Image: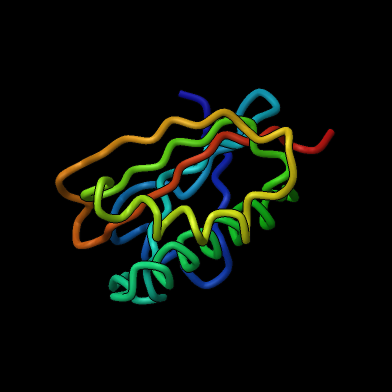
Length: 130
């Protein structure tokens, strides 16, 4: 098997190793980023919903930056939300702070019943700089 080209954000490698997954993998000109949640450095959830969404994007941006990317390089987004009917509007008030200008990436939003104590998760695919 080929060795995976893993990208770790600064200061969080132990958290990913403890949970046994890679935050992101470079492959064939793309960066595949695992779902990011609004966790503190120890992995615990940020309790405030809007702050949790901001922290999820901050964690995502740390990974993108480590790979030499930004959110402008993102081509595909999947978001997961617990109780989207009740929380979508609050979540989508925060998103424009990070999303950037049109044209926007593709988006799939999925309502879920459980996210390990979180209310929001975002995973992306970004193109790597040439």
